[in-house]
Structure formats: structure tokens, C-alpha cells
Image 1 (cartoon, one colour):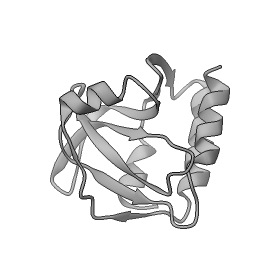
Image 2: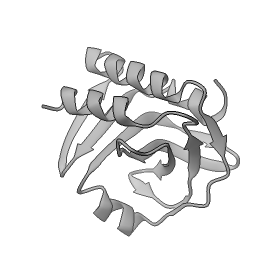
Image 3: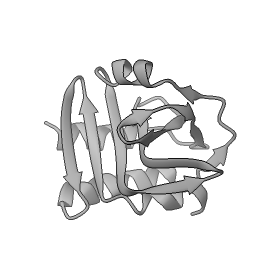
Image 4: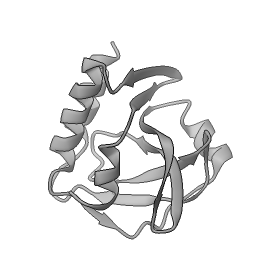
Length: 135
């Protein structure tokens, strides 16, 4: 595991956004461990690709109010490819076979994204895990 996937191992918490509701699980919570297991299963064999996506804070905040999202919270600022972040936000759709990781800094999302290609997998396992834990 290299690159951005390696960074997700350092998350201190995960925040879920589900149609306007928020849930946060610290790294000490067993639900965090279940999410991490589903994430690692989904991303095994995945690879980073150049991202063409750019996050615009106003649009991202509006979009985040509906649908299903997961955000890795780090507590500290990291740097990858000269792009700083203290969180990574991901829209979760069962059919997605790749996705942008939107960089957060102090609760705002702006600038270039990272992109992860799941190769021959999709997000259905992670989405099922999230829905189960947020019932």
C-alpha cells in the first residue's frame, strides 16, 4: 500500500454523512474498525491515477448535504504531491469503480483532488457497511 492509501491508515476518526445526518467514529470505536476493514478490502489492489477533479468548497458543502459520504479525519496536516490536507472526503456510490478523494483543510474543500481506481471492484461493500453501521 503506497501513496494516498497509506495516509488513510493514519486517520484518527471517520465521519459519515448520510442524507444530512452525521456520524463520527473515533479510531478506538469498533465501528471504525469495521469501516476500515471494508475500506481495505475495497482498496486492495487499487491504484492512484492523475485526478482531473477540482473541489470547490461551496459546491462540495452543498453536495455533501445529500447522498452518502465518508471522510477520513487526521487531526494533523499531511502533504502529498505538494497538496496539503487534514481530511479526505469521498462520495460513496455502490456502482463507483473509482472516485475522487477531496482534500479538506480546516473544514473547507478546495483545489485539486486525488483519484483512486478500484480496478475490478466497486464501492458496494463499503456502502453496505456504512448503511449497516448508521441504521
